[in-house]
Image (cartoon, rainbow, N blue to C red; front, side, top):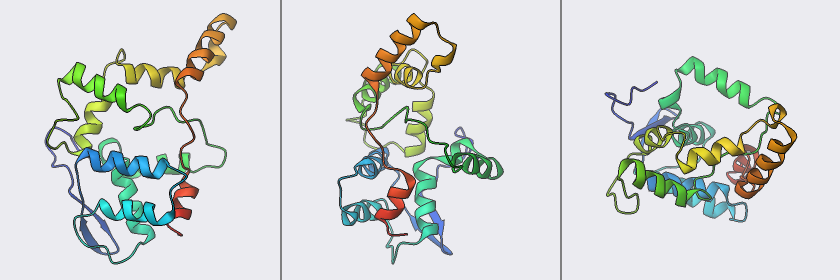
Amino acid sequence: MLNALYDKFPDSVQADGRTYLIQTDFRVWLKFADILSDKNLPPEQVGSAFLSVFRSPVRQFSEPLLDAVFHFLKAYDLYYHDEELEAFKLAHDAPNSYSPPVFDWKFDSRFILGDFLHYYQIDLTAVESLHWFKFRALFDALPEDAICMKRIAYRSADLSQCSESEKKRIRKIKQAVAIPHIMSDEEIGAAFML
């Protein structure tokens, strides 16, 4: 687990006994996430997007390399120690663990832009470079009253503890802010033919 205050954010991933230099700007990773969520793209375009995150040559796709890229995309090093990450992965790989997504980088992009401008005075369209992990840390630090955080709260609200009138109100909001389907891990693996 990295300490965002003093550890250097990574600029590479390790797989297959090699170190691969990668792009670190948040835009690269947002575009990559968008491409992965687009079910209509052909596998070649997904593969091309995968290669675009690297600054050093990639000879071939491998499952460890794919895992390393997704590890970086999900910024696990900001959140988990190695043993915690394994427990997290096991819990989320369990059958029937699917729940609707509560956030999508593309679908919610205009709210991200507004929240960063409002709370940090960072214009994400004009900033020269911002490391993906720093972007993620700032995003996670947005206060509860930020538009993005409100949307997440409504999407993840547990209606079982609400009165009937409150359930009706929250269902209406959930429907208004619902996210379209996002590609599953199996669909992503199929795109890379792993």
